Image 1 (cartoon, rainbow, N blue to C red):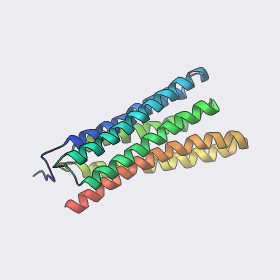
Image 2: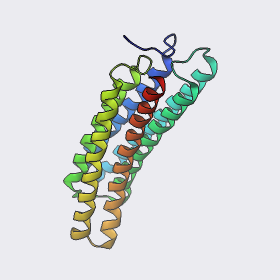
Image 3: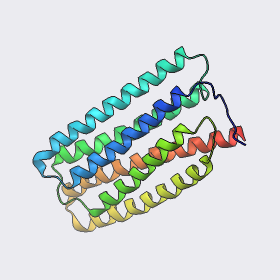
Image 4: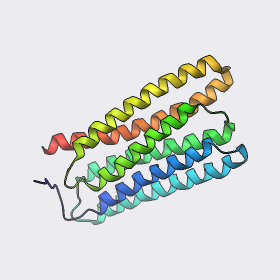
Length: 205
């Protein structure tokens, strides 16, 4: 039997799902940047800036929707908090692209691609999860999988930093670590979405 909180109006969940879709697009653009020539970095960074700006507009649209809709699919504070976390994840991806462009980072560790693969998967799962928040169907699996993926990112991040310390001089280390930290932070923000969904599940059970 499906549990519904406020099934009458799901526009807010659609906006959250669209915000998560922006992160999927962001990871794809970042993956392209990892294999691009330095001359392409500014263009790809601008693509991420545009995605971040679109995500911000979706956040504002959600705020407007919450104010003008009599019935929302979740309490307004939940919609707002989830939106802020998704925006923060997109901001981290945007920062990663800017770092690549500003520092003209080349020969980036394969750990970056590993991180992006996981962040992309987290984003894809979140797209689907946001659409089903009104019914809370199958979200326990989402919550658990997001935790598992975030632990994988944390392990990869530690290995990446250890390799950087062994293979790079101080300035290069700082620049590459900056990139590593932004990707790990993006994953952490998406994990926060999963944790928040877990809190909703416990609260409404």
